[in-house]
Image 1 (cartoon, rainbow, N blue to C red):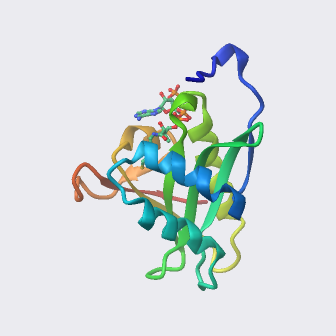
Image 2 (image 1 turned 30 degrees about the vertical axis):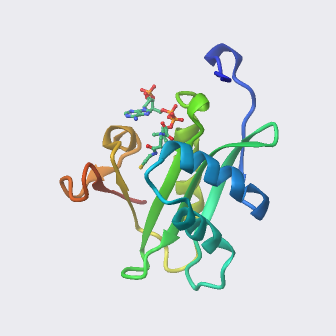
Amino acid sequence: MKKILKSNKPKFIIRHATKKDVSQMLKIIGVNNPKYPVSVARKEIMEMFSGALHKPIYLVMEDKKEVIGLGGFVRSWIDNNVVNIFWINVKSEYQGNGIGSKLIEGLIEEIGKLGKPVAKMVTLSTNKPKFYGKFGFKKISPKYDGNYILMGKVLG
Ligand SMILES: CC(C)(COP(=O)(O)OP(=O)(O)OC[C@H]1O[C@@H](n2cnc3c(N)ncnc32)[C@H](O)[C@@H]1OP(=O)(O)O)[C@@H](O)C(=O)NCCC(=O)NCCS
């Protein structure tokens, strides 16, 4: 299994996902979340190519044409100033190399570029609250869905 050495970090590229990336994105999601139905994940990812008013936007991290991480966001219907982040996933052998951090920073940068209404808050549901705490996300609720906690970050 490929393990990236911190001393030998290759140059990763962060960019918007395209249709060609979908199968690799689903593979990473499948390995990291074996209990989550792939058919549902596929529908969620494919929504970015739909005609929905609020379409999700996904970013991928690439290493030599290979997708090694992903993350997405969509504007909330309930409050257009709120944006939900989801599916931040890094390929297992690439974890611990700052890729998840770069994906969060990239997603927040993209959220900042959204047109009016300007995004004022980002929320996410996670079982890794310590990881997101590093980026200023605070707990909104205690565990409410198994081990998952709702977290939020006010922008600006
Ligand atoms: C959680 C995940 C996205 C982190 O990505 P990553 O590329 O491994 O993380 P980074 O290398 O950017 O780590 C950044 C910091 O977060 C910490 N961190 C990473 N994973 C963590 C975890 N699971 N719990 C707590 N802290 C974590 C790192 O130690 C690092 O800390 P440092 O800055 O003090 O060194 C990745 O491990 C992953 O895909 N996990 C499986 C899927 C998952 O759980 N996704 C999130 C569900 S909401």
